[in-house]
Amino acid sequence: MPVSSTLQKDPAVTGPLGGLALSSVRAQSPMMVVRAIRWYRDLARLGLHLPFFLVHDFGLLYAAPKEQLDIGPRQGQEAILSRLPRASELAGMHRSVIAEVAQSEASARARTMRLSDDLIVVVLARVLGSLVQRVSARPSYTASIPLDPEMVRDMDPQLPTLFPSVPRNFELAVLDALGRARLHVLTLADALDLDTLRLLGMLGPESTAAGALAHVDLLAAISSPAANDIVNFSLELLPSILETHRNKATGTHAIHGYAGIGSKGSLDSLVLTELAWDPDEFARRMMENEILFYTREQAPDEARRLHYLLIDASASMRGDRQVFARGLAIALGKKLQLSGEEVWMRFFDSRLYDVQRAKPNQLPAAYLLGFKGERGRNPSRVFAQLATEIALLRAREQRDPVIHLITHAALHVPRQLVQEVRRQAHLFGVFILPSGGELDLDYLDLLEGHAVVDHATLEQKTARAAAASKIVDTASRVAEKVASGTTEPAPRSLRDDAVPPSLRGGPRSAPPSFR
Image (tube, rainbow, N blue to C red; front, side, top):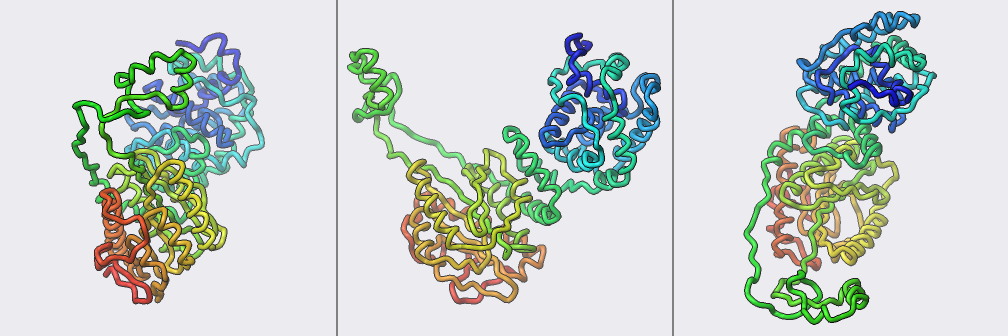
């Protein structure tokens, strides 16, 4: 269906779509063009205003199988561009860049990964974002094309009309910048960290509801030099983690008779005398939760369990310790999710940062990979704030928190603060030692269990992965004990069976080795 006459008068539509006369890639399915419109709009929300045809061409090279694409000049392109000086020359340069990107290994691998729209947006921001700073011209139209597949069907016959409908100074200026930055763009396209994209794809989409803020996290993740080491470590751990399945059990409930009267129930168990109230009083009683129901025998409401991963992001956790801590957090979070648990994640240094609530089957992996903490170190303040927030969480939402602490071995916290946190939650600690250091903390007996990782383990790839796998299994067993009610709510001494001997450490003793 051709673009309607009403839309042809709208520069927000004719401007971007008419620019397809400069395009060098055509998709066989109109839905791919609709996806390109979504990429174009999301990039504009990030402040990256690029010509639609450029977003369309580069995006399709990473999103669509090669057999579904035709690479070459559009029908009648020479006639359309002949009226503008240098337009044909710049279009030819654009085709050559597209051809090189299409043949690159990064593009070929990305096409097989079935990247989501959010990841495609981040790839385009990474590859083409530098062009925005090289161009002073700005488009004369806004990025507000409707997401209508019928509107973009059979575009080639309409391009001679749409292309001259608005000035094309912006498109030509961006193409000129592309020619000048050709080597830079090709280098960025070839240097994409596809392992990071693969990990983000494995852990689930993160930005379907969060919009531009999630795109910022994704962009920070693929742009961070340290992220690649964390990604590689996480990919070592995840194959065994993904074999976890949620255990299902048969539930029972009473089916004969009522046991009493209460304020909760279904409509069929309503006490019939409640219907004698006049409508206004009945409505008031319902809002005040005073309506009476016949009730069956029930177990008391149990607090909902919550796993709270607290990750040290202070300066003492740089390098190998940061890689291990964040890779372990990703693996442990995924393990707990696959077991049917709810997971929250949070960084700290001299204070607690915002909570990242993991959605079902999704983890905030981009946030974990790209986060930077630069606020010093103040464990006392962190635990004081944590104790207050956990108390409020238990009071307001009836949650039963299990805190998994991943930190440096020199986390010196006053014992009374740890006792206060332990009074409100279950605590499991992972302590990473410096070179030649030892674990010397006076609150270890307050924890449900703890594991110690020495510096020699971090330096050995195989030992590091084995240590992380053991810690994930140990933390999961602690979670199972909490779920079964075999742990005590009050602080107690660390029992010998809380963690395996290979992970066990103690105060004022040399840390065990994973070797």
